[in-house]
Amino acid sequence: MARRKKIPGVDPAYLEKQRMQLLRKNRYVLLFNDSEMAAIDEYCSRFKVHAKASFFREVIMSKILTDLEENHPTLF
Image (cartoon, rainbow, N blue to C red; front, side, top):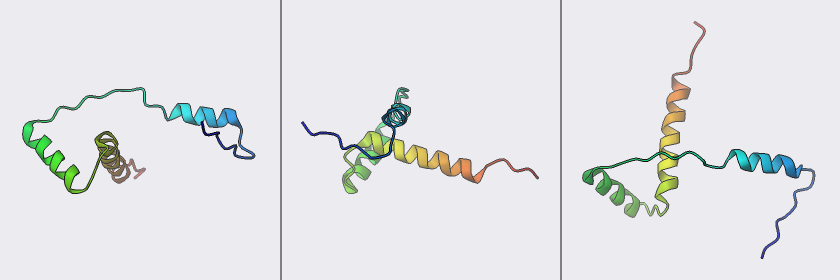
């Protein structure tokens, strides 16, 4: 079993708190029709995407963050 490397000067409680904040506890289910799924499978095979869950998460979050950045509230 590999030992964890200790990072000097970093509080272990802080690292644990950071790790707990990144845990994924919320589930959301997506359903695709046959043509959508065929397109996703084609994309994944062409660009060698093996982890579809992380691919979906990355694509969805990049779209959301881009839209939020472009449509942020202004004062005037």
